[in-house]
Image (tube, rainbow, N blue to C red; front, side, top):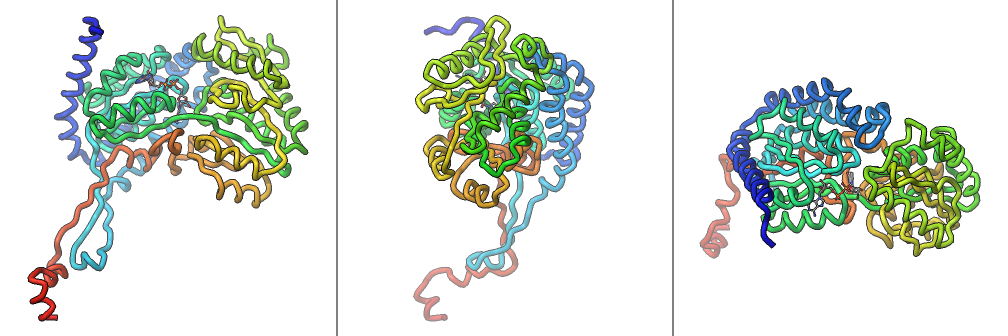
Length: 469
Ligand code: NAD
């Protein structure tokens, strides 16, 4: 297949941009903490100056209430920036390590060197914080960056480009808009590090492309994040937080509770509390929820149809509809939905839902739940609601996931002192704070000889040495 002239010109322009980042990356190796902090401070100011434009853009892209955008996008991003500005000097400090027996007499330290030219590819669901959050870490670590945001959030992208162009020269940080073909052109270039946030399916494509140049990768992916509610849990608190975690951004959140295991003894009460929480927050009829300014829309028609189909198939295969179930692809609306008794074979039990539908399954034995979780791919997040230390301990020891949260959900995204990432199919490597800084840094080993060397006593001829000893 021949490339079109437009395609060729996009490919040539990204290649030129990449070239221009080469000299800048070498220069940035010498950048000081003060210089990097100044850039981050300018970035923070540029974001805050355009806050209203960002809130308006998120409303146009996802019909999100400004308060929700502020809480889930602006505040975590501002927090990430302030944290990096405050801690960068300490993060950049090389740290000394002691000698081993075999290296007595030498001095060793680990220094953090910028990786160089970095590529950031971001998704549409939190188009601001998932594009500029990784950029904070890339800049803090002294790199150049090309950022390719998702093609599905044109309004937010426009403000992001305006922010980046106001703070950085194009040969240091540039925004390149486009879809998969633009990402493919970028991925053919020998970047030093690729930071990708998106689906596991595209994550595999990104990792394969990175392998051709042996570029290092950070992959922030997704999957199904389960919730366990045991019989000892504060059920009202659980319902209030789980419904918030599921319905915020209309379920289009990588760490959203995907489905719930609730103990049989408290299942009816839990479902009732979920139902009343939805009704209280968004309305108790479809018309009321549709009219609520607090409930966002799916990103595009295709995604609305996909989530609606998952719900319909679940109902057709025998699931009980405990709330909602309505959708309208034309207006990209899928209503908050609760499903019970969902058969294991239903597609909604297998695919990441990424929408406002919550399957609620009952359990009798925690061991069975743990075995089921371990039989699937490792989740990005695992949530437990319980007052029992034994339950919490059993889950902590016997399962694996990117993060484990007890009696809360989603807040781990705003805890910059914790690594944020997945395991295998839910991700490779970490973001946020020092962990993000490390993702974009090469930990270089520097070792120097001291005045005395134990090794010199061991030089050949060995037999002569034996005679000397
Ligand atoms: P996606 O993988 O479809 O797209 C992500 C980015 O990759 C976009 O910029 C897109 O243009 C690009 N892309 C698409 N196809 C490509 C291809 N063939 N080659 C190269 N690049 C390509 O993901 P999405 O639909 O935007 O986001 C939803 C997914 O992202 C969910 O699985 C969700 O769980 C995950 N996610 C993960 C995190 C995290 O931090 N772990 C955060 C948000 C979303």
